[in-house]
Length: 68
Image (cartoon, rainbow, N blue to C red; front, side, top):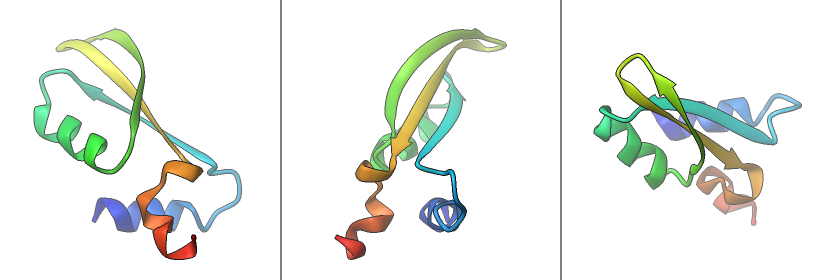
């Protein structure tokens, strides 16, 4: 499902980088983001502790492997 969402976003102009945030306590989502190739770019205070910001660059996007 996550790969499908990324692929759909890539069909729209202006989505060279995709950003997302996740709370530190949400370990399952952290695992999924890392598995998808997102990189940690910053940490901010959040409602449940730290909030991590992640970025997926077009060049790091595993959904584009077939295009390479």
